[in-house]
Image (cartoon, rainbow, N blue to C red; front, side, top):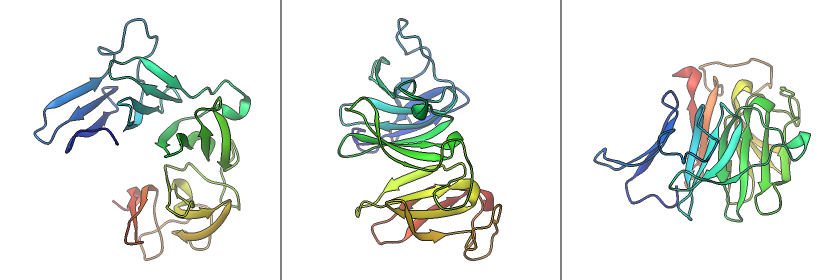
Length: 219
């Protein structure tokens, strides 16, 4: 969230279909809901899943319910939208995360299609990178199963929460170079013992080199 004031944070109210900006004293500073979107914009959040404040003060929103990734102005107007009708390959299914990059590309976690995408926002939504086979869940090489999160590392690798494969993987190109969870790569292999995960939902590689994982199924 690159343009949030110091200490402010975004809250995603999925049930209320709105996104809030709140300060450290819990004061509401900004809200995006059906009441704040301009009446001439034919859009309403259905099930918002992710929101990132951009340097231009717009907000990049992933709306899982409508399978859309949009950039919204502070007053609620649609500034940009990922064109998922450009080709059959561009069609999204329940995306859950959109991560802006320094080069203005966007990483999209297309959960329902079991894949991640990197798209060039400034080149007609051209797909620069794709991992996972559209609509195919699996644990074999080149496949994912309902991924939930992605981070590009300083070395250019990607780290992915491969949720329903119960693992976190690091990719160099399209090659897995590190993995935690499901060490035997068996379908449905989850657990609480060391080396296993159960539905990891979020992942972050820390500056120390350690990896922080939110493992939803192990509470």
